[in-house]
Image (tube, rainbow, N blue to C red; front, side):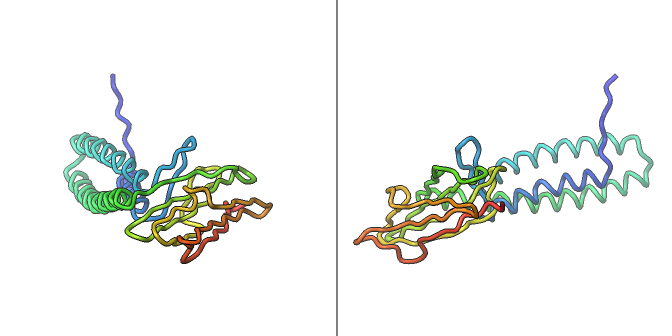
Length: 206
């Protein structure tokens, strides 16, 4: 005899809304994830969460239908109302996540984004990750401090370089670690100088 595991309505709502909300937040944030030395941008994390959201949504819908078939009429009506609001909220969040994921993907493609995991790592495994892009005659870069979880929730510093120059890709940078964190310094060239920024304090929250 097969038994069906049923989540309480509050738990179903939390799952049905929570995962899409995380997907939407990841798609429009400066988040990134490092897995086994490979960088997964925020839009990549969001894409995975969107797929998980769709799978969960289908499973929760089927579970709700099975539960309603064995419930009283008043319970079925209440469950349908709750499920309708959950589906509406979930749909809006998934659309938001898909738009953010699409925007992030297109932005990386147009700007030729390159991600670099810098070595050596600092104390407690704190790692510097850099995203470099270029568009027309301007090069941009952002630095992230990634801790043991492999997750960075926002950038630690940024810079702008003339003529689309990419200092980290060209190896014109210095990375120093101390007890309180790290310091990343990037430098341009005589013809492609750093126009803005150029230093990033790296702190993994020790």
